[in-house]
Amino acid sequence: MGDHLRERRIEPDLVLCSPARRTRETVERLRLPPRVPVEYEEGLYAAGAEVLLARVRSLDDDVSAVLLVAHNPGLQALAIDLVDDEGAPFAENLPTGALVALEVEGPWSALERARLAVYVTPREL
Image: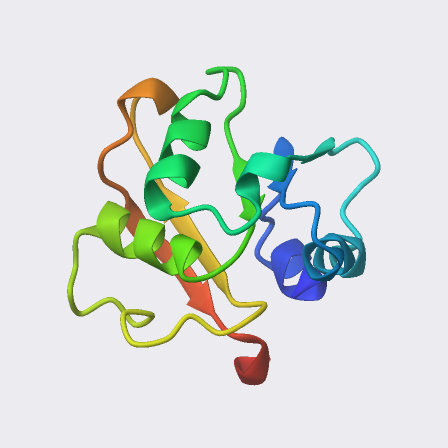
């Protein structure tokens, strides 16, 4: 997935990550540039969509791209809520390690909807 991020020129300004071993390992395997800060936050562990959305809405507006590494079912529910599309390709299942890249407009604090830009699973790579 790290290679895919580099190929697509997707580079976050910030990574928000659950402190669980599995999510930490995921971030390490991405081999992001050292300049990308990673914040491990207890509140992301097993967080639901509402908690994840509140955290993203609290971002400073100087963060233009964030990578959220957390857990299902919260991540899946958040993605479905943001794209507001029952036909989202991840509506039935969001596999471990999948990438859902969303494009948003406006400030983080006003985030309500997003456009699905990329969806790829590890199996597809």
